[in-house]
Length: 392
Ligand code: PLP
Image (tube, helix red, strand yellow):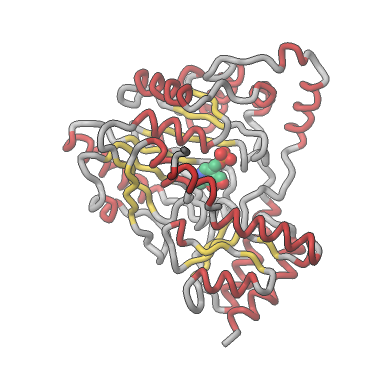
């Protein structure tokens, strides 16, 4: 016998993976250049040269010590380098011992949710959201409560969130810059959310932790400001990843930062370590920990993403697509011009244009375009976008 729910999760691919797999099969048939694959968020710019050089130098050095197990929370050098970088940028008083290194943001989120799961626990999630959140929450034993999207600006609104908080709310997950909208949450909206969570934590007699999922923190355009959430709300927990910021999604490195001022910070970190242990975490990849100890201050070159973003936004809105201008990440959302989003995605697919219907993201009328693609893909796809919206 197997666990039916796990079997279901392992059998039904996500809508993103479905299109991505289809795109690869189709590319083998008609040539990669003829498939306009905007399905998945695989970084299209290479890792910074400093990252690759450091990895090469490490692999050419004393590999005996390089490949050893590290402490579960990470090497002191890696944690110190990350803390120093956070302090340089956000003056947040981070210490090495406030950090727990993980194999990316996904296991960071599962460990934090599991650490916060008490009886009847709920986690609040703002639509549109990364679909795996609901899977992670269920896996941790938590109920997901979804706050519907404000499709006019895709910002979050405290007064709406207030209607969905209950005495069982243990955590609220936010993600800015956002996947799938590309929107960066404004300081005002985050400040209002922080005030609401302070008030409700007092009312319910326990802290409501704000989990800030930040894989796209460094990918911003137009000079947009990404607020560092722990400076706005004491009970924040940061889940970070180098998957997108250093273009290393297949290598697996990220961290959890629990600010020392968070309520029960010590117990929380212990519970996170315990939750990670129960999930089979041993340590983040040692090679990457050694790399980040030397490269924590490196930032990505976002110019190619920015160029794609501007070209797609300008052309698509000129053709008549409804879209909120993205200021971060490498995604944008369009409203389905006709029919539901799945039908529109199918029509696009028939023309080898792969865009993801956002039902699983909590936005059933919208489609996500991943703008991390080659410049030629953007240019060659534009006539297809135009044809689609003009079709009767
Ligand atoms: N959170 C969001 C919003 C994401 O978009 C992703 C990946 O696409 C993740 C978390 C997981 O990232 P990682 O590769 O670090 O596990």
